[in-house]
Length: 234
Image 1 (cartoon, one colour):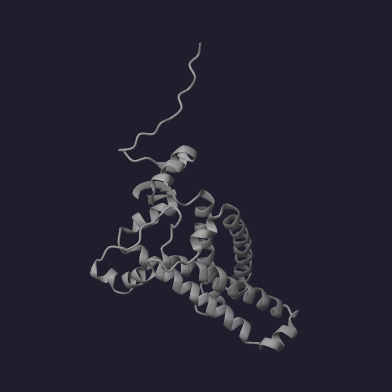
Image 2 (cartoon, rainbow, N blue to C red):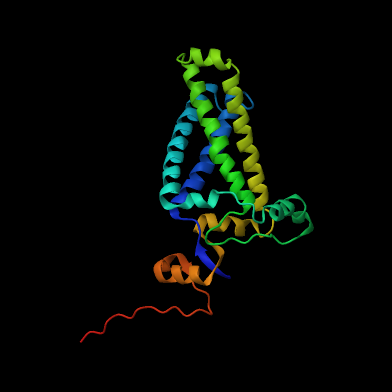
């Protein structure tokens, strides 16, 4: 394999990422206000804003799920056991000793095994738990879920919602911390802004991208790219 600069994150993926990040931070801020952790905004404003942003984020997740499956990008989130132990050891203690990261991005695997597992758990466990419990809590609050409240208990639904929110907050803290490790913070952040990152490609993958998706790869200086010349005018 050889290293190339490849457009790893598409435009929609970057818009989705930053919109999701802003929405989650706003939901955490309003959620803390609803729970009385701070008084920076009123309870009524926090509850109204929390509900509005939650529905906007849910709509974004629906579009993102559709995009993942129609573009085949869902494959990047399937966990693999290959190099999983090495990556886990690196984040457990190797990172504190200055070891090199044991994983390199590839064309078919832009997330390392630990990232893939974490993102998958977020998408199929934490995120569904928070929006299902949130909708259930809203239905109960409006007096339409008496049977649901009796079945689960009045405190169960908000408890599930709060636990899921705390799990997301922990993920964000860990995510931000890992951005400060290894390369510079900007180097980690840049791919999600520009979309471009260093990726290991096989000769076949590089040839395919250069031939069919030339706008998504920057050839190395030692490569000669053969372009079809324009027909000469007679």
